[in-house]
Length: 221
Image (cartoon, rainbow, N blue to C red; front, side, top):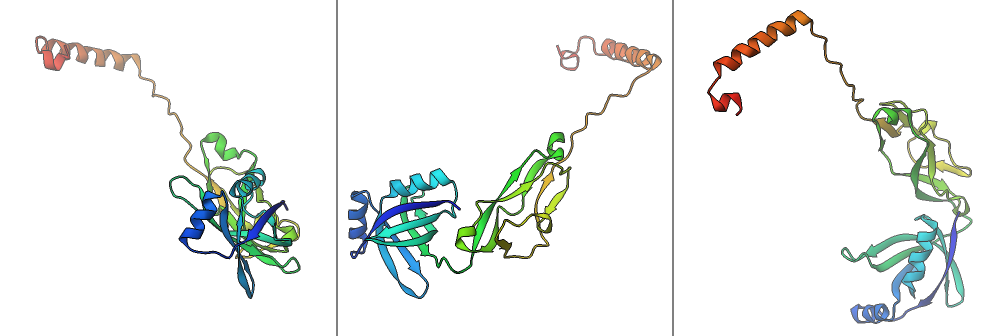
């Protein structure tokens, strides 16, 4: 499981004015939720946070947050962004108990090229993430499904998916996760026409042309 280390500082000022000061100083307001404990308000460098998650490409990356000398292992619970600039505005972290199981949503990824895709099929992801129960150290990066043998209109049931080591699915497993869908495009060959039939059609065409002689609209001239 990927882990990143970040430094943060506790903050005691709140409200719009305090938030503006933080952002002017290139600091991101955030909070840490702890089960049964008061919320910890912090500020950290948004660039460091963005860089860390671009490197891991995993929403479930464990974040070791050191706040004024005290280190807490957390997951990102929620992130708010500006709808236009996509700039981070606020982040919620959740502190983990490393000795207790938790449930997290893990992304579904595929490997291989399905047989059905070779004839025009496309992957249909029914579930982009799946809930998994495990210890924090065992959180998988992804649920990887090999689709190589899938034909057109075939699906993968969760019962057929290998559970990552140290984890279990926290949902009904009798569900389809993904499939290959679409319709094969077949090119039909034009029926062969006997020579006699072609001659008859040609004669009719000549008569039609003679009858339309001088009529520019019907002749297409």
